[in-house]
Length: 348
Image (cartoon, rainbow, N blue to C red; front, side, top):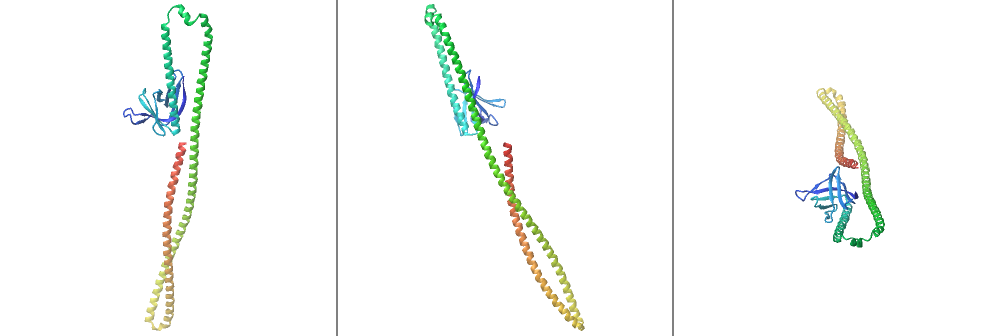
């Protein structure tokens, strides 16, 4: 009966039969690779199945050698299958365990072959000795003993054979239990490593997500501040528009006053009798000129305020552009983090 004695997982490759140099993948992903022991034939095999397809069926002989070609890759040649098998492992530890088991099974196969040869030689010697015996009854009696002696030895031989069979059964069962225990230990170690790795990755992603959320909140706060500043800029624009309208109105009033002044001058030249009126008009003219100067000063102040407002607006646009560029970079980083989180969720 054939039973598994060691099991692991690896990516399986075979040498390209045409070039004898390149590796050809025999499995699309890591598959189970097991050592099997046939107690009936006293032989060992490496077997791997991908779905319903057998991709490795290699009987181990004492002449085989397993070679480590890198930290996670090993190979051996099978002359019966006329190919070279390669295994890619997830860690160097798994490769070392597989190589140690290969050496152990190879030695066991060597011992099994030696025992088989000894049995064949013993059987051959016994057949030769039986061929040399004479057919006379006296010689047979002297070599094999009397019938009474034969009968007296039969019970002892039967008891020894029964005890031997029982011991063999116990040893085989013990080996089977040891194999199953080793397989469970290996699987437990693999699951523990996977769990530790998953926990560390989860903690790392949690910290990154928390950091990204904090940066996102800061950016939102900054955006709110900029929106408020934009509102202030719009209000400043409205004030500037109102000031421009006021300046236009003042300029229109000034033109009207100048026109009135011109009319009064003409009247003063044509009507000497209205000298008294002319004096009053002159007073009005002086008052208008004073108002004109005041208006000019106000226009100068308003123009200065408009220039300052335009400069502030340019500065605000420059700062807003810089912030929007930084915001685009942060949004791209946040998008990459979300894609990584989604990918991690799919992998899990």
